[in-house]
Image (cartoon, rainbow, N blue to C red):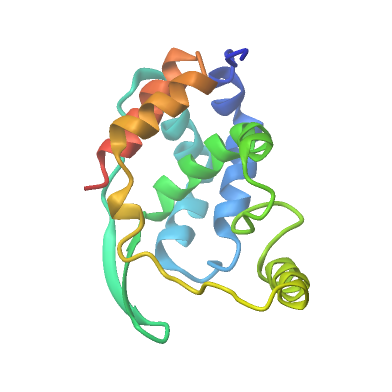
Length: 173
């Protein structure tokens, strides 16, 4: 399998960072952290770019809160600045990740989503008498970091991108 490289320069491209800001802003127009970022957009984009290039951009300052959906769940949310970083990486890497996904994965995928998942479930329900409904407790907490790193290294050879993947992975305990 051919590993992919030379992606980092596309990630730190100013146009990509502005697109990342736009995507991170969706549904958050009135939030204080988004408004502060937008008020100094040029400086924030340059700080993000410089921090990515020299490895100093801060990651991992998460906020945790509890929702009831219908059961209690603890949500870990990245600050707005870090969401811009995540979108910048995802803008470039998403088409590559999408190729490796199982067809019936619907979250955060172009052309998929909740309604497509419901439609697909109805198709299966019409063909089968039994189904399994499950919810993995603390799923993201249980992902082995070393295994994830190995998988990323099998797909990517861009050392700077892999370094950022490692930093982001290491922030989540």
